[in-house]
Image (tube, rainbow, N blue to C red):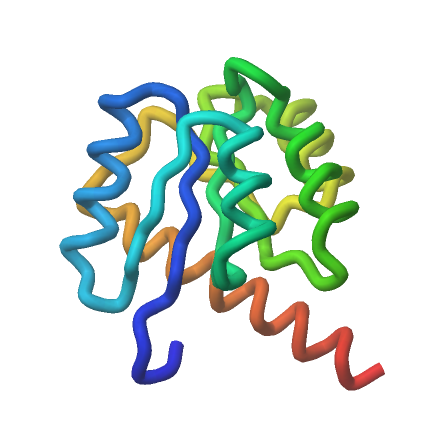
Length: 137
């Protein structure tokens, strides 16, 4: 990551998980976090605000399934940022479905708040390497 903080968009409807995630990432000066409770709010945010460096999406949102949100983001943005799922649905079949939708990774709930920043850094690093590899082709 560069000298500026990475901007993370969190889409999580559970207020407790949203708060824990946001606090855990804010403890690292390398992250700024904006949290949305619904897919609709996240899509509106993406239409109006700067592009995040990473989007963390819960799969079970009240207004749209996470995979559907990933597809909506891909339709909305010419070059969508990396998107990772932060979800309790993390069986092998779930992971395959998320990867097929283009997810950069999965953070399993419950997660360790202390290790969350490191997981997010690893996701950003992998996503940056994939992006760099694609741009050199």
